[in-house]
Amino acid sequence: MIFQTLDDKETCVASYYGGKLYFDHVPNDATATWNYHTYLPETVKFAELYTYGKTIEEVCPEELKKDWDKSSQRLKAMLRSFYHVGLTVEDFCFYELTPHRFLKQHAELKNKITEHVLENHPEPKNYSHMVAVEKLIKQISLEPLKLNPSNIRMQLATKRGKELYTKCSTYRSVEYNQFGTRTGRLTTRSNSFPILTLPKKMRAVIEPYKNVFLEFDVVSAEVATLFYLSGQPIPKGDLHEWINQRAFNGKYTREESKTRFFAWLYDPRKQNESLEKLFNRRNIFEKFYFDGEIINPLGRNIKVNEEKALNYLVQSTFNDIFLRNIVKLSENMKKWKTKSEVAFIIHDSVVLDFDVADKNKIEQIIDCLSVFEDYKFDLHMNMGTNYGDMRKVI
Image (cartoon, rainbow, N blue to C red; front, side):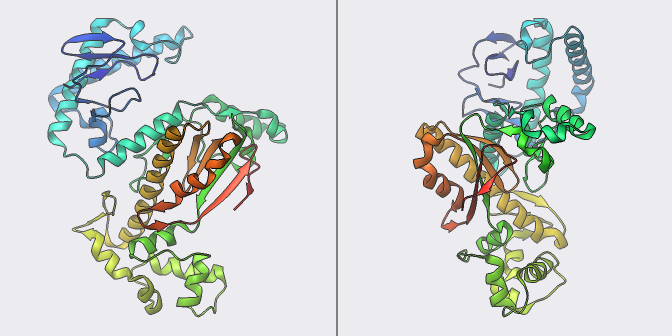
């Protein structure tokens, strides 16, 4: 049974199905809805994920567009009227102040669009991964960041610093979008705290609710991913120095070797016999590139030209592996009943709001984040009492 929720807040559970509104529950035989909410059963399909994050306006069938546009405009007018009297959607359950007749009409249109998408879009090969990531980022968004402006007193003494803080403090929740890039690298939505673009000098404003922040980032992520794609064990130690010794006989500095390696890796016109022998770049390309698109080992499809194919393959494979490991960690932390939680994610690092009572779980946390299949990715661990004062531990 296709249904729609009437609010996305966990304290405002209500739904529409079978022509009626139901409060405090969703249907037991629910099969599909438009988008993910934390309180929905695991068996529900989410049409938005079938479209790889397109808006409902983008996939609305022609015969419904006029009605949907009219209904959407009326919805926006209602939201504006709430705002003008000092209400935001966080202050109340949306359906409490909205005419039930309108709720039914709007939800029925949404049901029809959802049905259209499910009938005309195949389920993505990496659908289960997308659901898991959506669950993770929704959970992160439910916990607003703890901000302490006293940590950035010097910045707040300047006009620019005050402007930045005002902008940052407007939205305290991190609202990620897993469809903001083609490779699956997370971006943030317009109504999000700007965690991915926050200037370093402003990072100290973020404090943990628990005792400290623990940050884990993958060492030489792209190189380690290339070893994974080539089917080789990931060597221990400095991967760029490992390459320097074996491909260039150690005649370059680490930075020079790194520059030459990436120039070769991401430019198919550049040839290097030693690097090709180490990684077999051509075989990797032929294994994962078909008819103008890559299909990475975790099932992500990306249409891309040959020149950028390996770049997209490496980037998307790493992003999917790392997010999958963070999902695994989040699920395990619930099983372990830890007080610590995933606070936020920044590209190739994840930050935990860490309670010292969980210190006996650190090795298991590292295992969750570093091991994928039979491969082990090295990690750095940093610790700090605010995000602007993180010190390297390992």
